[in-house]
Length: 426
Length: 171
Figure 1 (cartoon, rainbow over the protein chains, first blue to last red):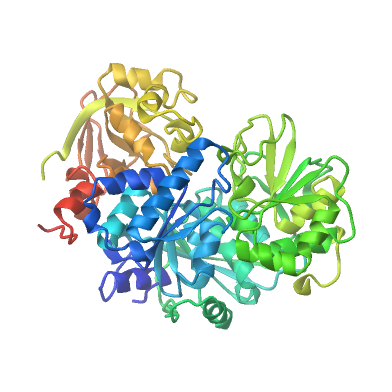
Figure 2: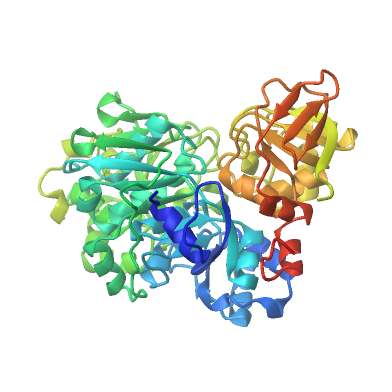
């Protein structure tokens, strides 16, 4: 009987020949991450343990990303606490403006194929883009990892989703993840580990692969993992990662179910207000006006996303009354966008740039509050009522290209109707 | 194992309850767990927390995906303050499920549609059985793995780690 990628990674880290779904195992952790929203709780939990017992700090990163820069004294004090703890315990530290945890971990060479990575954020599933098992945890978990280098897991059932065909120009991984949310519904794959395979995945660049895995958090997935290929190996090598140890599923691995989707005919998708799984094609939206256009977050704040926006808005202006904010996912991305001239293109069109970080994703960070009865189109991952601290505003979700196209027209717009040319070589 | 038998009055909530919104200070900045424990779930059912507290605690019974989309461990600290002894639901948000175990709160995946508010239930974590005093109805569930029961029994993950830094569940 064969095994899935998740089972193989967890078995190896548990020093077992094999594990099966449902079993509880204790695994060695390769790297752990703590963000500023969960740092206070994590430090509180760690204070319950003997400080001398903290063995794992050199494989832990503290990331100041959600409150970047800190909008109030409370956030500033959390950051001070994190800097102090990090200096004493000798952890890695990514300060404000360095970027979002899920971007700076791979960019910093902290993970590689075959790794088991944990972080205090649901979107830690992003690391699956590199053939690592990444999953979200909380403060008690991190404290246990810091003390012992290990953590318990219930081995998840895996599902295999075969993405056939090739995305059409102007259609992106975000359109696939939104489509799948419409199909399976939010939390529809709760507890499961998703393996995405197929020609559409092979053809995706790393940025889009990260989106594909990242958004699995909204499906409730415990992990979302891709096979490693030459693109993966080359990217990891370029970012100074440890030597990859790619893990592949056995041909006779056991899955809870298998599914497939031919992406060749997929149109750009949007999630309508309040519900991430209320998803329709942009062609089915009739003149839905928007006032705010947001590009950024761990789902779609990468260089390819900013390129898409620049491709659409080059030499043009935002529609009257529309405001647009771009938040690069990391300082490296910010710099790359600067060097490519993308920031000049978008700023000239009327967009504004924020310091790299989580930015406009969630209202608790006070980066942005839309007005009453305003509609936001965002490249983020969540749109429930009040996500941006105003129950009287609506949030719709789409790809970065859909956000930029909508900012151009003032209405939710299929990006293919406003930009042609070669999207792949923007 | 000790404390594997739980008895209490049932308090009901619906499906898809987000505990970040309803049982944490994520959207109530500056408020502590003590405060949240007096208003938790008020948006769904006004006076819910007060009812539980007035009863001296109880067993929380919910519909599917309880704790959906919520990551905050604080929700469990709040439930402890409300003296919730156990949570029953057909399924839970993944992180909520972990947090309950890590903080020593018994959490059971089982069918809950026939459970009424205000019943007295007996839950046997070891045998995987929920029995209602009123109508002798019995709900069976797959008991949690022994390792998880051990963490719960010791009052949570950090207590376990302090006692067993080598993760020896057999000890």
